[in-house]
Length: 145
Image (cartoon, rainbow, N blue to C red):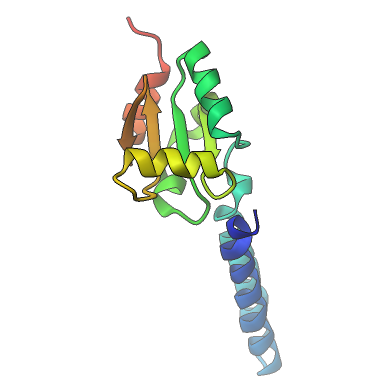
């Protein structure tokens, strides 16, 4: 669990150090402007931006029932963030599995990607798709015509 928060904590820590340094050297305006920017970066790269993660086994069970895709992701991944932002509200319809919190999820991703933990990996109808286009993922949510 701590692994998912490492990058956001580093952003806050570095932002605090830089802001403090700027304030101490007589540039309080830049320091107070930079700190919120680092906090925003921390928030964007944190697990808070993503819908609540569930375990891989639970996600696969739910997907079998409702035919919704399963997204394997990890915090700090710019491609996962891109997918999440571009999906907008549609992201809540997917089953999200944080591979840093769920060993079974990490194993599923490694099995689908020749031993690599490449994310986002989206599983649709039992077939994995690595870093798919967000528009394609959104199409998988709509019922067939």
